[in-house]
Image (tube, rainbow, N blue to C red; front, side, top):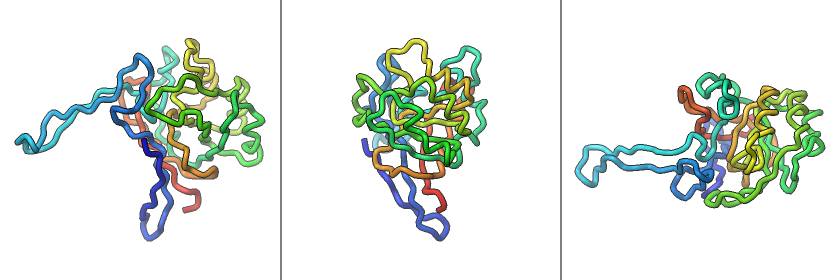
Amino acid sequence: MPQNASTLSDPGNRVQIYDITLPLDRTLACWPGDTPYRYRPQLRMQEGASINLGALEMSVHSGTHIDAPYHYLADGATIEALDPAIFLGPARLLDVTGRNPIRITDLQALRERPAPRILLRTGAWPDPTRFPEAIPVMDEQVPGFLRECGVILVGIDLPSVDVLDSKTLPIHHLLGACGIHILESLALRHVPEGDYELIALPLRLVGADGAPVRAVLRAAGQ
């Protein structure tokens, strides 16, 4: 499962682009009991068809994805109702490797230099082909602190912001109550800490509780 950075040409400039999306294929671990990713060819040119054509089957939480509020709130907004501007704009990547729980003290830099979107690298899911046995989570005081700092989106390199066996999803609810949206299962291993422009637009799936995204970072100021 490559987690790579690529350099692309951007109207006359060489711009560093980091692809922070987990590749979707059969090897990607899905949430136990959820629908795994499957691409099924329906027409093949090598078999005489005029085109290649395939169909997808997967959970809307497969790979890198946005959780809509409807995922954890019975009356929450579904994915197509969310403002695309939430998922496009300035972001900061912070390394919180080894922190569990992730505390306000680990995020103090946001007081002096706020950022509307933060991405947290925990390094706690190094092999996306195997579902983790346990993951670090935020302290329950963190969502309120993030709201004070003007954060509207939190991204993380894990399949959830809550402990894996949680039935009540307290961090999901606390973030939602603070107006903070959730981006999960990012590929951040090879991206330096710093400021970026995030582009992580969810598919416009009507009535859905989440959606996959193609998430990329562009170095700030480029």
